[in-house]
Length: 233
Image (tube, rainbow, N blue to C red; front, top):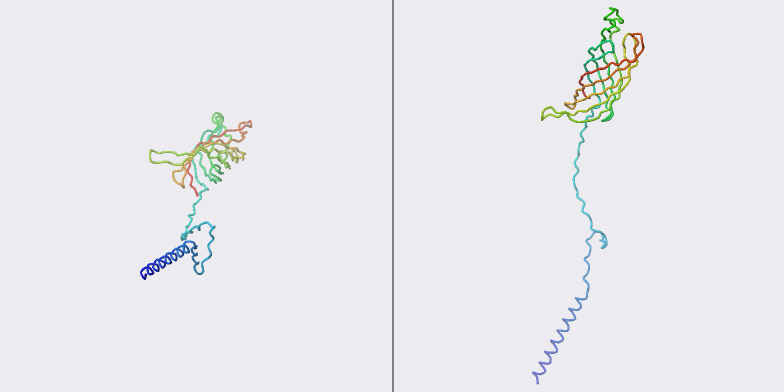
């Protein structure tokens, strides 16, 4: 009898312990985990906010921009030949100055001097139309130039130099035969730049002015061909 009571009590005790474990498991499974408390001093986080981009902290370097020298002024000298209509071809020399407005356009001022010879009439009649001082020809003009066909000139296989053709057109004056004559000039040239400060020019142009030395007033064409060097500043 006592054994049966003991078995009954042990069965009831085990049943009670199993029910408590089930209730405890159900309680912990249904409860939501508590949110972690924010750290002291931290800002509250918004669940809908996009992720924060990490901003790199890079130390900025101080860069010194080099001052590029702009060489827009060109000064030089030239020597060549000037064919003065009716007075033969004689040496000419002069100075030139140019200012480059852009890569394509530039202004050029020049002054040159030559000396006229004798006309065929003077040679045949032994009559002097001009004195020695009147035979001196001096011209000065201001022209607008235009660069075109830029390229390179090659010497051999290892040396290339910047080059360009250009056109010239302008107005000026010519002191000749004791008078100053209004002059129109136009022509073309070829420029080669061996270094960044030196240029070599080959230029051909015409100086046109009126002359009445031989009894009739007419326009004279005075062709000039020259070679010169200039320096950039």
